[in-house]
Length: 451
Image (cartoon, rainbow, N blue to C red):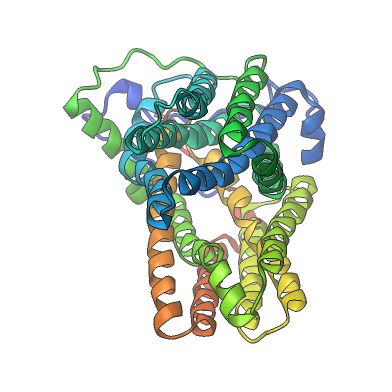
């Protein structure tokens, strides 16, 4: 008998907010490929993957070119770092609100419009510069606006995946979507650097704008199985708060599995994000790495993640216990790699360990995202994913601040040890979580009651 976690529904809850179990696509999507890699041969997912790969390459180009452009424009390292701050604020402040609106809209048109708006906003930067009309204030405003609309795209994409592929393809599909980010990190900075040298940072931004337009064109022919939401109450202040509470209740009160996933995601972001942010510090202080060697270390991280994503895409999804055990083992391996890194002084050996770390952490997101997509009703997907993203972002910032302070005050090796212990703790929590599903009859994800 399958484990059930009943979903309580408030008597005041509007009919449009009824929690309806996500329907399986198995009856609608005929003869899906057995392997996640086979999804690339399908029209819908193949176009989604192609658009995301191109967009991620452009996004990585943009990060390098924009920082370089601001530094050339101002000559100030502080003013350059403001760009990063402006890109961080929107997910923290607007994430849950965006989720409410996202659950009322069809996801495919939202993603197309977001790509088009991002293309225009990025395009305005070099255009205004060429007209000698780009002030620093206008640049910051464009970056902030771009970050706001970009905050919408990630949850919309995660909400769309279960509307395109079947339940048993979710982990492979998420791994392939994650691989587009890795492809962007490997290709984008190198192309951007060459472009800056040849045509200038402002002209590289034209290429980035074009990649968003191409992504939108790839999305247009995709068939997404989604039904427009029924008419809902006006989204005034009371309605907005009520919709927010429905999403929060689902994550934090009504579904224990989702709450435990939220806990593990928070712990994971606390350690993994701190490592990525502080990698230049570790490389220079512990390994005495040159800029070229630092570049190779960054590439090692991307290579490890890409290899794991490719492997995960072809792996059988399995039951909930096997997936949680896979995450626990991977995080434990990553924790050992991070702790060992603090004892090394050889960049080559460090690169090998960073490949291991990148590979181990790349398992987490596709597995957890697939479980959320299975557990979450379609009319709550936007709120659930924005809640997770906001929590992960807040945890990541806390980890970067805490371990950054530790690296300065105590030492980089000790900071690495702390990151490793956080990842090991996440592995232990995940392993304990998996023990809830020891019996074979508990091997599937808990079902949802249809109200």
